[in-house]
Length: 302
Image (cartoon, rainbow, N blue to C red; front, side, top):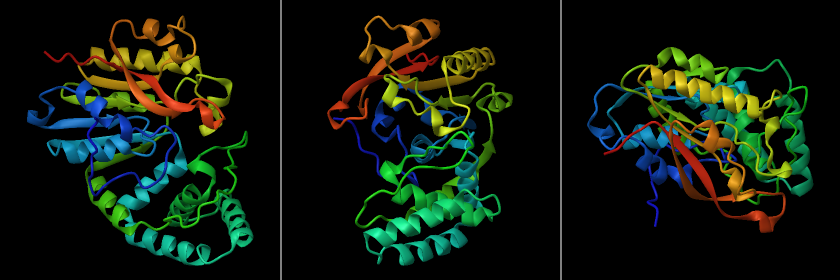
């Protein structure tokens, strides 16, 4: 049975492909002596919902510095607001929650659509952006983040009876932890300048889709195709040459096609391990179940 980690700081949004269930496997892929090392820098170039970030900084308090990055500007804005203006964010979320929860189903949908339209407008404060980002995540269908070809958020309204829109306790715990984190926004490759000894990277890129219906290429309007997967491999080569350690997650194509060795070939110079995860692999409910994912690393535990 995998260990269940319970810490005060945890993801403030629901996130498709979140890594909470894989934390024990990720821990086994990290250096065995990580808790004894001093002045460790942790870098996460695709931070997403932050499950690994919030876990690792509490599990390993000797990690004195962290750098996170994501290409999603609204997500990174939300991290920065939590870091610097959490009380103002809690106030905004509290107002949204007080307005939304008493409404009936039709009125909730109308309110959601109004907030979604506002979220897609250019002129907003950072605090309003962060509040709307969390509100929409908590009330949209399945907590998805999806944009159209023009970069507009377009996920429909969800049907939750009592969504927790304002989780003040978690937000305050996250804000405290984020005080030791440098927050970047942009392409993952910009984190290469931090590579060096005593630096550990964790990569959770957009997964290579197993089926047509499992593709979430619209997470950003530019997508993340096989060419991007190969560019990420080259980046792993680069940071490994600079003596950094890394662990990377991705989908396992052999769930669908036993002959698909895309990642086995791409990362043949590194360690590859298959681990079990519960995922939705197609659009139907019967496509949910335990499948394998891959963990790639250059960590050698002896």
